[in-house]
Length: 506
Image (cartoon, rainbow, N blue to C red; front, top):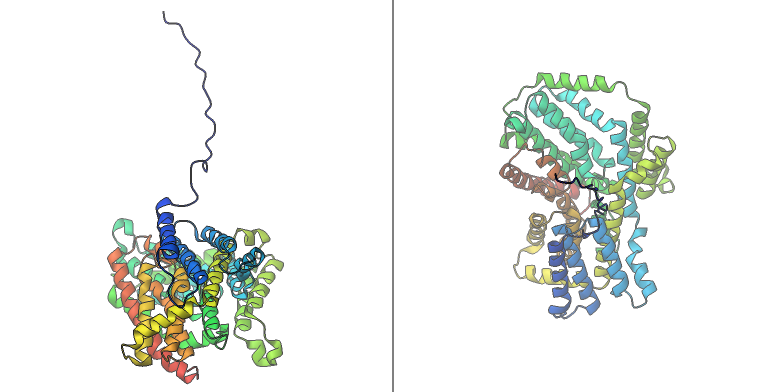
């Protein structure tokens, strides 16, 4: 008879999930590093460029490549970039000055404008005011599918000034409302019924986002980067304020938003066109939400206050002494939300996207600033200018070519911030050198910096959210994206150009 042996269970030591895991993706990081080393050491420093500027360019290209390839989260990459600038001394010989340079952009007010505004936008989600606005417009205009499309566009437009995260706006607030309406008509990708209305509504949900992002400085995080680059390129002779930007983009933005649902309706007509139940469904949701609660009322009042201050209403009424800085305005709104208890400090601490944005903005703005100070941007823009001037296009043709190249280069980018940081400064300087009116060209590139989001399913943060819901195929998405890019460019160039001429901007 076999003897029984005691088998003791041996406890395995708990595995540390971080023990054998790198903080970066090996292949993308290798590609980014190889590009940086190739530029720094294999390519001779061009005539007219200092070694410091060239080595900073190598680091910059490496960082942009790592962002595009998603080697690490952008915030983590920013920490690496700040470290590299501080320890290599590409901006200063003295270590103490090098670290000051590396951290210098954390004092940039535009960075804190967006960070504070993202924190403020948390109130729209927390109080439920954002969803209420969406259902309110559908209750008013939702008797036809086209009307639902316009309701989504109106909601997007109304929320844009105080929601700098275009991903949160389109993906976190509008998209759940859109899906609920589509589901109420049994338009479900899993059932193969997305053509009923879901495909159309999803595209409207998405394509309203680039247009609204172009209309306000505070509508998407990279817009202040555009302001900063334009100001530096013109020695602050052109400094786009919140009010100037909003007024400039008002007419072309409204025209583009008006045409967008119609264009998509023609391109991908929904099978269901009459939707009498949608308005009733929205009213039911509003009834479930009940009367506006205290938080929503406070959020709405602060929303109105922020718009008034950003638009410069006190200065118009009481004179320059009553003007309030745009970043100070954002802090006023955030402080009021904290004082009234609509947001808690825990809410602010948990708003990861705000702190992440502040971090990567500071790093990228810092690198772009010193590329400009070290003369690299001027050298590159001179190269662009020389290449285009031989074509004999005149300033209008040259500016058009630069805008087209700038916008459609976004097929190669998965980050609007990386794209703007890499290309805007040089393209803007080249256009000015070729004779383009500085304000006109600044506004065209500012608009293109948001309109380029239309192109792909990876163009910005909201695109994978909406595309990933399955209402469109990849081919449908790209077709709609290209069509809308053409339409939007025509609207902002033609209507915008005439409007900006009437305003005396050029």
